[in-house]
Length: 200
Image 1 (cartoon, rainbow, N blue to C red):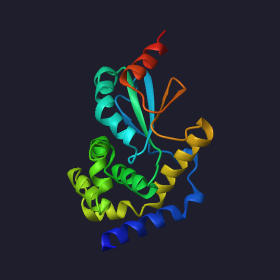
Image 2: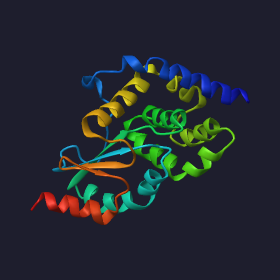
Image 3: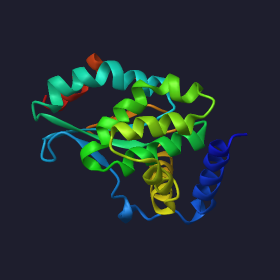
Image 4: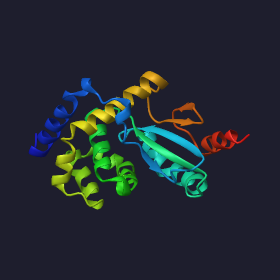
């Protein structure tokens, strides 16, 4: 086992050590919003950085949704992490994206999703994630410090648990449009129809 892989394993062992003391809902300040905050319609996406269907959504469907609904100011997308297996990798990639900051969050998340096959199949996934993080202006020291943030790990874990307990979400991706949960991979056409139906 290489030193970087050992570091990766240690960081995530520490990250999950305090999961039982998860943050309260009032502290969920980690929602990331794509689009205008005052957009009249809201799409909530629950996704995992290690979920292939989620990666496919970000590569193929989100650009259409963004062009038609988000960039036009008609809707906004709220992204919420829902870590899936391998949980250490999923949680780690999610944390790194958050630590890039709100201005660079979706750019780095996009890289992570687009390069999912590459970094997940690498002998050292953390090294590959660090390369992507560097594109967002994050050096190795900042990534290492990010992965030690218990508060961030707790917030992500607690928010995902709330989605499971209160909304019945048990897999990714999942979407909420107008209060209705749409589980599983959704096409642009399905989400487009769900948004248009709100106005009827």
